[in-house]
Image 1 (tube, rainbow, N blue to C red):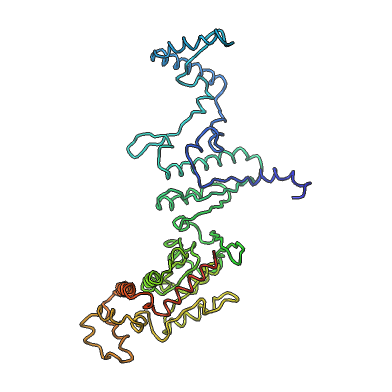
Image 2: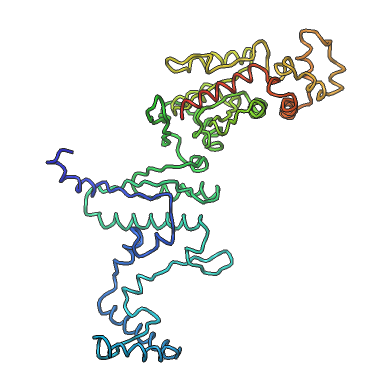
Length: 430
């Protein structure tokens, strides 16, 4: 601000006060008399002066009863009183022993919050687990905000900006999901930094902002309200936000049709020595939805993507959709890998060294009905169709086991390229 306008900043801060709660929520510190959030409740006493004087007389009486009953402090008092022979101190009641604070202010400063445990025992909040402490501090923060804002209601239009860092810290995943309702109830605009997919699963999709690095610059990705049609939004909510919120944190999405591809991605990456988790690559099964809106979401959020598709008509349709979603300047070969001339991943793996695995898993009854012979053009395809019903994921695990025994050279080219390219795209976002 220009120097002549800086005086207006306090007025702006009255209208839009900013409150910040860090991830380091130490209950012992936050519920102390010097805490920013607890101290106002301790100091802002609403006890009338005459009532305060009466309470302090009662405290003195209770203190005298305790000390007299205890008895052992009498000698200490007498010896300490001899100080008046050496230094200048008061003449009467030189030494007093206070079992309880004699003043209301001192008593309020020692106020302690206790919470009943599962057994019913009331324990000081600092003796509870980190999750309970963190949640208690968050609730204190909410109470502080409501109290602070109520004092500023005289300023027309007051609305707080509330910054919360990792409110999910130390909480059970179920508690994290429930926590969002509490956060929603906090007055004002909320800015929440989180590493929790469980928390994101409760947040409206259009409210999410993803910070990512591109070309050395930090950018902000978001899904605009008009990106999806209603049914697309519902499907994306179900397949990603509600069940796989961690996908928003990925550095790259590696998209495959279904469970089989996801199993092969993870197994082949392990054999190749590529740590997908460390690289930030997340496998996304898109066949339950439409590859197009997965790619729209990835582009909007700033998440690089790579597609691994079949070579049949449906797969080639997915390729065309992926090409249409490429950002300006992007090369299709870096984002799309296709298993050429095969209708699905099973015959591709059979053609590339794992036919024996599928033959070993095939149903004998179905094999007897095959018309193709070893060496025929459609023999591999027919063998893979002889797998027992719903056994494709099990076959994928068997192929992965075979890969581990045969080594990295056994990983078929298309699968290998998809994994390497996804890892390379993920590195761009670091």
